[in-house]
Image 1 (spheres, rainbow, N blue to C red):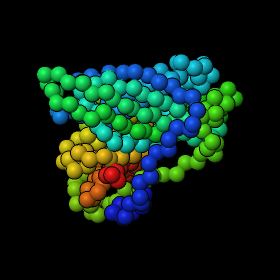
Image 2: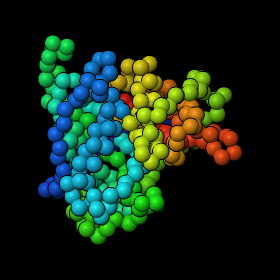
Image 3: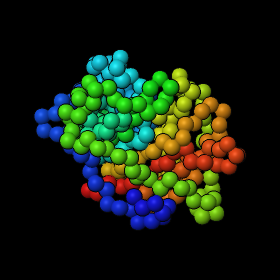
Image 4: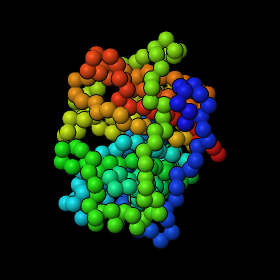
Length: 277
C-alpha cells in the first residue's frame, strides 16, 4: 500500500491458501445477536473476538498452553468475501501460513452456513471471511521470545515460508489536521474495552472502525479488506482520537493518543479497501 495518505493503492493480493496436506485446527461456533449490526451483518469487532476465541481454543488443544502461552497481535487482515449474518453456525479453520523464530502469520478461514428465521427469512449465500494475523510470541514480561523447538516444529510443518519478516501495509504517518477534510473525532473508551493486562482489547479498536463505516456503505456492501496494525498499546485513561481520510476506494484511519511529550502519536492504523471481484 502506498505510504501517501491519498496515494494510489497497490493491487490487493489474496491471502495465501493452506499448504496441501498441512494440519489445521478446526472449531465450530454460533453467530449470536450481540455479534451483528442492525442489518444482521457480523461486525468487525465480532470477527476479532472470533479470532481470539479460536486462537485460545487452538492453544488449549496443544502443548502451547504450557510451552508458548503468551502471544500478542501486531496486525490483523480481514477479507470479507461473502458476509456472515445471523442466524448461522460457522466453522473456523486455523493454520500457520508463515513464520520465523519469534512470530507467525496465522491464517483463519471462517465459513458460515446461513439459516433463516422469522427475523431474517430470506436465504443468503454461505458466508466466507478469510483472515491473517501477525502474532508475536512473548515471554511473561511481554518481550518477544523465541518459539520453543516443539512449537516451531509443529508450525513450520504447515508452511514452506520459514523466514517471515515484518513489513507495514498501512501508511504509519498520520497527515496533519490541516491536510484532511474531516475534523478529528474523539472515540470514547469504556472500562469494558480493556483486558486483564490493561490494554485495549483488539475487538474494541474495530468498534471504532464500525462507527466510521456507517457512512461508507459502498465499502461494506461489497467484498472488502480491513487491515489494522497495532503500533502502541492503548491503556485506561487515555484519550483516543481518530483522524480519517475518505477516498473513493478506501477509508484510512489513524488512531491517536497523547505521547510522553503531550503531542499526539499513532497507536494504530486502519485501512478498509474494496476487494477486486
